[in-house]
Image (cartoon, rainbow, N blue to C red; front, side, top):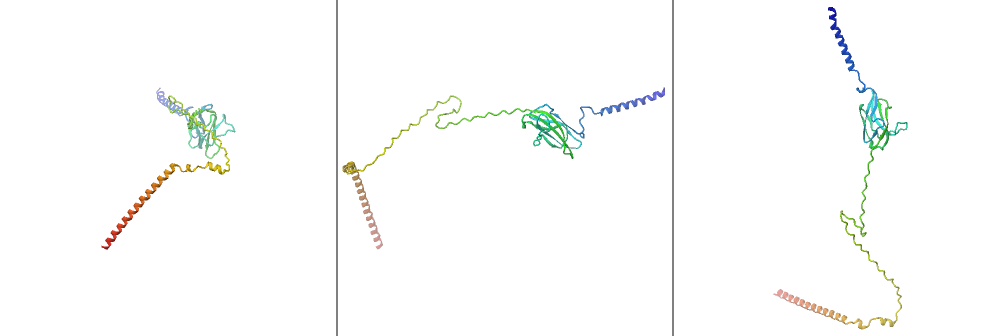
Length: 265
């Protein structure tokens, strides 16, 4: 009896140690859907967008791109519903390219779908390893880009400025229209008489005498008066000039006499 009692504590200890080891092993066992893939494993997938998604605007592409000998990854797109041998990838405009960091359940790139026409598209995730030019590829088919087309801005028609003389006046402000202006018609041009060609005939002596003015018509009374007045004015002017000449001459003589007397004295 005493020996059985002594062995019981030892058996309990062994059972407790075994229970702890089992619980520790269960705690370190990975559960599906919880643990992320290890970086050294090769995983490449696109979790968003899945096939059949309608895209618009800025699209964030999510997924995983890892490899044990990872070098870089890239994202490409092409038009079409499914990937075929004739698919033309837009290598000149990739979504992302030469990305040197691995991504695990994160953002691979952002695709601006407003830069492409609406329609079906496919995606490709490519991963390169060091020393190998052939990439590993993952495709997503049957994607539809559907962006709202921009509404064209209506063009404002410019109001033509009325030309001068047309009589059309546009109102400057809203309200009562001004009364229509009175349009004056240009005066009708009076037709000029048709010039008549006059043929001159040689004149005879009798006709010349009849057509020439008489001596009385040439020496009219007004012409005589005008000549008389002109002659009187001319005579007065000459008389005044003579007086001025005589006076100036007398003054000069008087000045010379005084000058001689002063010299002799």
